[in-house]
Length: 377
Image 1: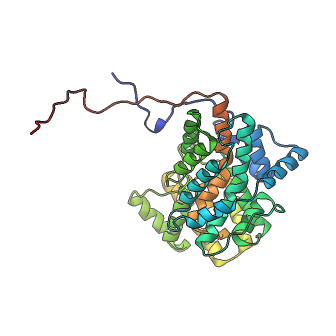
Image 2: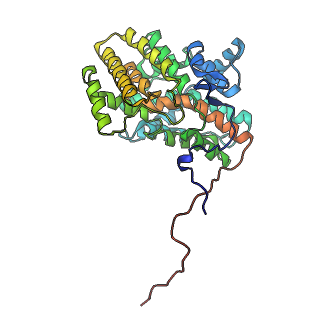
């Protein structure tokens, strides 16, 4: 008799963590005990990043020191820019980012230092430099020169500056800031578990993050926000949205942006992101922005009405990023800019009480048999 196989590791508790949890009594995602919707609306993104790594929200002095440390680490090397220019412009930006983080690792002479201080230093370095890598690749793909990071702007403002050469309206920046907090961490999701598995072999943190990027690229994970935007473009207009959704449900299509393995009563992150998306649409004020808002609301209403399935975070975030001016393939790299905090927190946690991740498998191949030599001539 074989043991029961938990396909996809569904329901398997693999380790302990103190980083985040979805609280069943409130259906709320929490970071270090704080509800994520409260963090997103009451704190700056830099405060949340500090919390994820340091277990407590910062004091004013601690926040100032943390911001100064992150800004000190800004600025990618000339070799990194050269590498970005050399890579295939037709490849997905996640491929570029995966290669760039691997390049960071081989260029770092302290890569093998996995002491708590060493891991923290490298986490801050990736936190500071990955946005510039993403922005540089974004501009190079569009035939433009990269814009270096500035140390005079906040984290989110600096990213807009590096991508577009300007900082948009505060409501747009706030919407992006909120998305950073909401995407930062989600316990043992596929990419985080990948990073922890790699770290469990005592490999370096850059290797763990590179593996996390590879996992996040998949359309069933981080790539879902890109798929949502492609879906909205297929729908085309708000007046087609209800009929489109009803037909898609009739055809039993896989509709990205809805449902979640963890949340049974709706993704707790969605109302906060949806509210920020709406406020941004009001500020942008264009016909296109209003059309995507109406389209999204109708699709959401029909899915809930017909199937009782609620949207996940990717559903409002996809169109929000698009209206900010980002091209669809950059959506998942933006996810990485946020999730680097969660991944590295888990790598540090894994290394602090490490046990090699090595599950069993249920063999379903042929029974043991003898080798019959071929007749040789």
